Image (cartoon, rainbow, N blue to C red; front, side, top):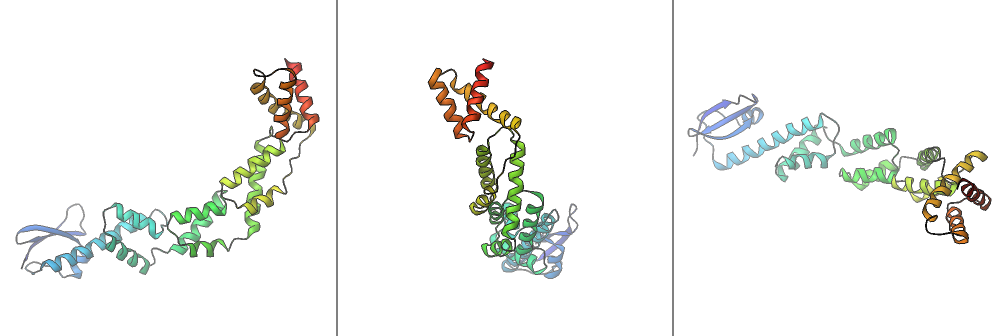
Length: 267
């Protein structure tokens, strides 16, 4: 049976020790593992003991790596498992490491999810669907996600969606109300707001402009349509194409005819 002939402290990491069996280097262990298994010179250990020691040491290393990883911010269990897997740690040792982290209170998916939701709500304009997707990517269970998200009132999401709609209106003074409605709808859907919330917000859509602002908007869209059709069509066909394009964007026929007249005078 192999005998421990020498134990030396590592120079780069004083909490780890090199174990020599029968005069040859065999493996290294953490100081806590050294104490746990009472490893000392002249002690005999067999292959089963070595396997058990190395497994316990792997858990210890995984635990320490996880603590460093957690020192930057909260992590979900999946994030930690993926991180340890990247460092070539076995699945059994990873699960045991997670169990140890849970026992000491270093990981808690529910607490992580709650903090994640609060951060997204307070620092972004993302909607509930996008936040749920983010949580699922972090490995949070559907049960936890639904329980925490249900604590948020529907009115809160509507208010957030309405704020986004206001931004769309302010940033697009040259779009027609119909275009703004479509842009708002697309923006809210992309950010993860439900169809019900989007419909409720759009029902309250109101684009208030004075006459000059509305003329600026229709003329801006008319110029875009003109650049598209002027080289391809003339006369009646050009005018019909222009009217159809601008009408689809939500402008009135009076506004459209005025814009076409303005363009003809500029030419």
